[in-house]
Image 1 (cartoon, rainbow, N blue to C red):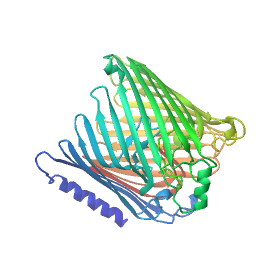
Image 2 (cartoon, rainbow, N blue to C red):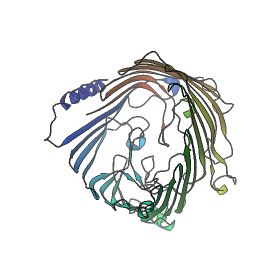
Image 3 (cartoon, one colour):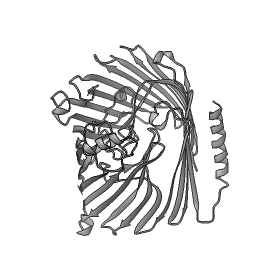
Image 4 (cartoon, rainbow, N blue to C red):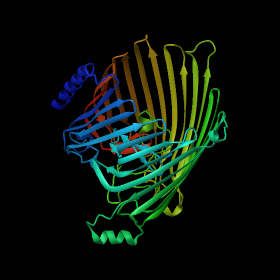
Length: 528
């Protein structure tokens, strides 16, 4: 608790100094601080007591800009690493820096330092940071971008890739080219572009186990692994079409894999929008496309490309109880999304929003499991949002989810029927009340669940909430959570206490498993 108080003192000190910082007449300094701290409380109801009683993840970022020149540094301090982040070293204190120097001109950019970038949809390469999931796989090296007027751009980057809280011995080199055919041939009403990427990952065998290294070579593992992708983007009026095909040379998922395999991926998207109606269809096929930074490591950080779950991402508790996990070794599926808005001609405060979504995924090959192409995931859902007046808004959501608890290795699936009611009432411009009621009906797994949330906001500074999620079936356990948040200008503080269920925490379709815990959580974000 002392550490939390010290963090509070630090943020108010930074805020008070921000108005006094002046660096020249043209230079601009920007800074941000984020701190997420948890004090764990013993709770025999949900299992073993945590080894460490405190965990804190902190990020301080400073950026200075002067004309076309910019420089930045970010300090990442885990004091110590929180429960569930074993790949970062749960219970250990870790610290590392990210840094860059950049010159950005009209026709080119040069960056030296830690590179965050993505080629296309990320099927062959993506380096990014996600603080909630503890991901930071930046490239320590450099990047050059050359712009070809309105015709497109070429990009090249290279360096060694970060793995967990240090840099790996893996070197990544890549290039990406984008050409706008519509601009070349002056097709003003159309979007038409061709794009392509190449990536080479080079990792020497570490030499710690000569027999293992010899075995890796015998199974087809190469020091250099190449990845390629080609992309097409087309758009005309309300119609859009996108496609990407990617391929990878022989590679092993990790040192415990049976053999090195070639990988392929295809992603296709089609969309249409007109007036208040929009429709989108998405299809993806993956085969052995999980590409790791190092074959000697495991964990969510050990990923060089980006293969998220292409399903509806929920914020409601019960709808997000068992999110889909991508099978990077082989899956086939997609989703369809339809939306329509019906607006009142008399009042802008009265409207209907209708939304329907369907997603399904299967094992790619029957020989991946028991000889059948088993179902991995299926979700049929719809929601209706109604703004009745300036004060009242309601939302009803239904989701029918069917999922394979063994990730396709047998035919067993569980089904859940989820009902959500969401009610918001605005008393005036500053005071509002939001209430959620949720029910999950299932004859499988843990049985039925019920959940609820009450949130009261005093805009623009205060917000209070309390939620509870209770299992009526197998565990007979409730997961409660309550908290308060305070915001002023660019600073936000949140303090909460509750019991958290073991399960997956997801962000952008990527998930990390989090063990159950009970504790006090303190979140701080500020910028200037």
